Amino acid sequence: MELYVFLLIGSAYLLGSISTAIIVCKVMGLGDPREGGSGNPGATNVLRIGGEKGKKAAAITLFGDTLKGLVPVLIAHWLEFSTLAIILAGFAAFIGHLYPVFFQFKGGKGVATMLGVMFGLSLPIGLAVAGTWLFVAKVLKISSLSALIATILAPIYIWFLSGLQEWVWVTAVMTLILFWRHRTNIQRLLSGEETLIKVKSEDKK
Image (cartoon, rainbow, N blue to C red):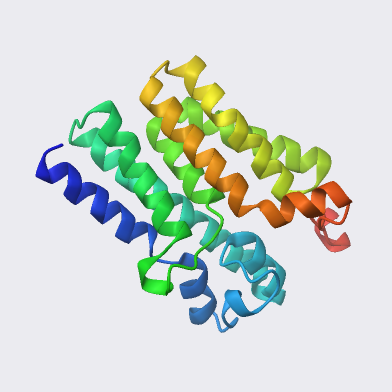
């Protein structure tokens, strides 16, 4: 690979290392998400610990984490990098979110950032993954299970919608890493103890 490809991949990792959850919670006075709830600096935990500001803070966190995966891939597309370089830029942002250099390598679980990468690769792929997550979340009301199902289907969507093997294999690796990061959630799912997505009664009116 040429130097500018390595520069993009390095920049993507650094962008991914910016923890949206920690920054948003600090700005909105919600405390450190690593010290409350599940301890995970992600949108779901921000919603859990945020109280009255939870929905807004979680939405901003979700948007920011998705953007971290989207932007490097779009830049790689714009610069007309190779198929492999494009997906590696997204992978670097994903790894940055999971293991951020700015926060002692303790980051989130990567769902939103991976979704951003999928949207960057292709709008239909991103919509397929996001649609799967939303459908499963609506039916089963379990955030972690929704994420796991959506991401395990992501390589399949890529295969049918693009046929690009480099994207399929790197996305499969991202899926395996994401499952590892969700290992405690998987244990709770198997034991029937995983937390449901709660909807307040006033939100249904």
